[in-house]
Length: 385
Image 1 (cartoon, one colour):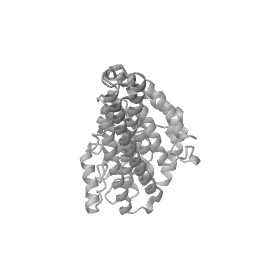
Image 2 (spheres, rainbow, N blue to C red):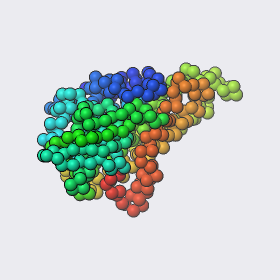
Image 3 (cartoon, rainbow, N blue to C red):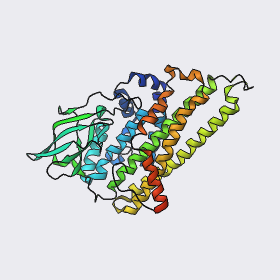
């Protein structure tokens, strides 16, 4: 299947009314249905299990394309891909096959309740199974998900664990409480669990300090999701601004040219922004290649190799963050005062980039990059590094 062209078609449709949907701020049920109908949700599932059989390089490229049309939906799709891979990172081969076949058959969309800074979700043994209780914020996709991956702490052992569950259970409460100024359709509100039964086989694994290096790739993999949808937002802003400048923006009275597209200052600014986007894309592709190599190594991956992958991803994360924030703010310099009209929604690109780039401080990524460059060190495994 031509995944990239499919993604571009979906992204084009999303872009048509992205500003209006951003204003309406409704849970993205129709958008998820659009992804489901396109076949993109099963892209990473092996063909023999009913999926698309694509690799992570392709998935990252698809995320970038979708984010260019709508940053929120790019985030949703990226999280879906990562969460659907959690059984591979933490579970058994048998459990992974079971879930992937069911996901392909059911067209599942995956959401998460994994915020490590909300440690109050507990998993308590009870009559041969477990009970899940507590609340998580920033549960991206959970509001519209068919399956949820959640982080919890076992009350009997104190171990941090990963579980998978069906959100249709009445003890799962998914309020529509996401109302931030950016990524408004990412369904990143809260989720509460009240005595939700979890079977022993649905506890995928433990997030221990001695986790197999392959399992710790979960963090570079999701950080690279961020890289690509940041870049997609930036590229979407550039494309929208280019179309507007060519067709609507008027030349300045002192420019001496017939169209805004001939203005030397406009051209120079677009040149700067295009260079920034090209550079960030090169580093994003490098990060995608590094993650794919690590995933291909499987359980033979070493800690040193994992550390080098994380360092490569950190470089791309910094570059994509800086490029997205700069590009989405400065496109207004080359579109003009009329482009600030609310109906056009040019501000959404910056709001989207600014909102998610606060996920984890880029200053700490810079410290990782500097420490690796100067001292050859690798950041310890956390759900942020």
